[in-house]
Image 1 (spheres, rainbow, N blue to C red):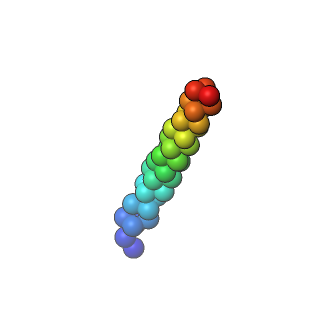
Image 2 (spheres, rainbow, N blue to C red; image 1 turned 90 degrees about the vertical axis):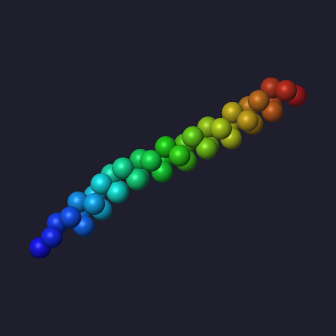
Amino acid sequence: MNHWPFIIAAYAIGLGGPALFLLQSLLAMRKAEAEAEAIRRR
């Protein structure tokens, strides 16, 4: 039995999940900073 597909899937989940979380949090941070700046300018 070849184990490489499972190893590749584990790395994809282990690296892809946190990468997606990082991207989502960066986008949320940029949105929050833009909203805070708009409030500050009022």
